[in-house]
Length: 444
Image (cartoon, rainbow, N blue to C red; front, side, top):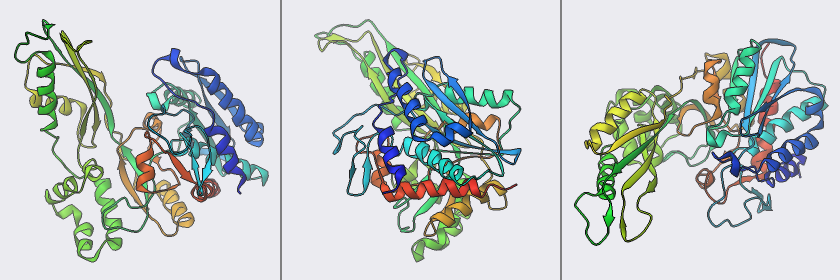
């Protein structure tokens, strides 16, 4: 078995779980991960310059510099070592790293230790051969990505202070997706050329409260429930951004015959296309609009007490073309209730769109490497729905991409941040090769 597989198993077994509360973080696990990474990749640590990124939560991100023959067009490869908490009933232990039926099981195999280990193994193998990259290569490994932490912004500031402006940045997100689009059996190497902005709101309703035996109409919980229902019944208008149109153009030759002209001419379909995508299911619907998800609820502390205050958290993914302000105005209009207070917890606009045609040397580098390592796949841009540390690098780089070089089924994609996360052994080894070839192909 490929030696990199055992390294991934070892690092998956270290429970580097993030938390917004620093007191709930197992800092020993994070420190142990950093030490184990050094043990697993000795040449990387010997030949690359390491700048520790020490966060306020006392965990440590890692910023490595691999000096190239030139430094004018630096390349940044990103990943993160933290994972989300474990929930659900797993078939195999969440931190077991077990290999069963050709799959490596465990939290972080897909998000994002698989990519981190694949990057490190690619570098280690190239160092064994005495390879020097054409340009400086920086490895930026965050430790708090899952909680929108400080490691990535601090790494950006470190680069800025050194006068480093990356030519291209490649982070997690995207994949060689199987079964991602209705009617298309060809795997698609989707490259995130932008990502939705993450904005969170808290809806609050306050009232007198009291005994549950004498309720009044539209108390805090009922009024809050009405606000949630109104918001759920009023989705943002759907539209199809240019990356999605380009995705369809590239998929058109691989779609069923009746769909090919529609996909090839998607830009001319007007409102018909977004309506069709909304009807196709939540995955494709999210490609067309800003989304709202009510994620947290809090009311009375007891069954027989009417709540004095009821709150709901709303997680919003802001689509390219919308703004935080336009989204807030939509929420206010949809809820239409002066008794519902709307507080902004965090606000982030959608990311700029990176170049996405093969006329651009950066995108072409990714596209051609995907084609070489995954010859059965179609490389195509898309709008990433989730958030990554890459968003912080858009202030210092015009080519920020999100692509994890692993084959993933729909079930695997659904396991991210859920239970039964797993990565195929062969898929992982392919990912190592992809990073290796990417580094080898960096242009002068």
